[in-house]
Amino acid sequence: MHELPVTESILTIALRYAEREHATSISDLYLVIGDLSSIVDESVQFYWDIISRDTIAEGATLHFERTPMQMVCFDCGKTYRPEPGTLSCPGCGSTIVQVAGGEDFRLEAITVEKDENTEKANEAAPSVDGVIEET
Ligand SMILES: [Zn+2]
Image 1 (cartoon, protein in one colour):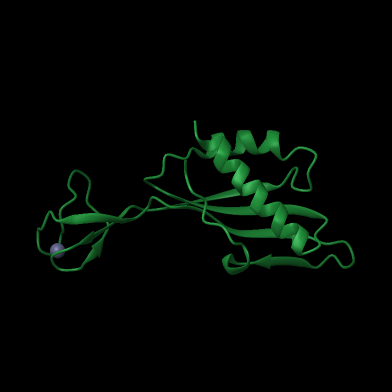
Image 2 (image 1 turned 90 degrees about the vertical axis):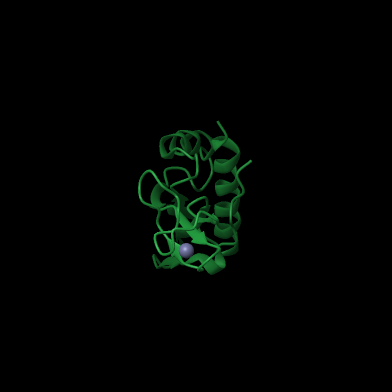
């Protein structure tokens, strides 16, 4: 049940971003979750509904995107998606391999609304400073 601190991190980053952009509300959050991460979408949504209450992020839609597991081979340097049932390298058969992706969890983008003009600021990751550490 570590979704609560993770969800709190998302909210903190989102509110900080919204404040900097002088936004009046946050409408959408785009989250990327690695397949190996133990984060459960429904739990994040559940906590989100509770902790975003009475903030400008209340009612924002959470979008979840899953990224596949990736391995890297130390013998031939190949990056690959393992076949079910084996982790060894499909290129050279080596078993000296390491997980290279699919464990991450990050906030990719936020859509906020501003008052003056209904222009939407939909900015990609660089302005959202958050890789969220799982605890
Ligand atoms: Zn290999």
